[in-house]
Length: 214
Image (cartoon, rainbow, N blue to C red):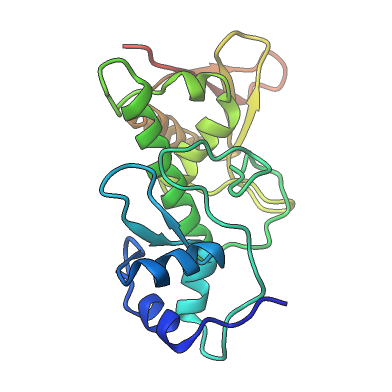
């Protein structure tokens, strides 16, 4: 069982910036919070420290810290599906919706923008990078969720993102035509090329989205 934070550690957590989760304190305190997976050290200068989702939950808890949770993936490093953060492609069983998930999505999206900045030759953040092109469906799904759109649940409507046989293209479906258009707008804003198509059988509308290269 994880030992609760000390009074000094809790003071650092409680003083975190409510939006970014940035924390300040002595090097020893910050290092200990990283060990406890309640904070992470940004990999780029000035190497500030930020709360992980578990750290945010401790900050918000009224009756003590929750059980230990995996650390959030630091901005600037890939957030792979099945790892610290998993993008929702639609159709999964959702058990952690709410403010904590929103924070995780925001952190993952900021991390992805940092990957773009570091790996695109011109440092651009307005178009996908090679890392995204090798993980099309999760990257597109993250862009949609970061834009505030909801994935389909087991029994609830929403977007669904799926790989296609077409090189560098994913299909995005939504039962609501206007919501499908919103998905297209969000992906376009995130640097994807989007076109709408109609299925030969059934006439359902769907989107094909590909990472923009220039």
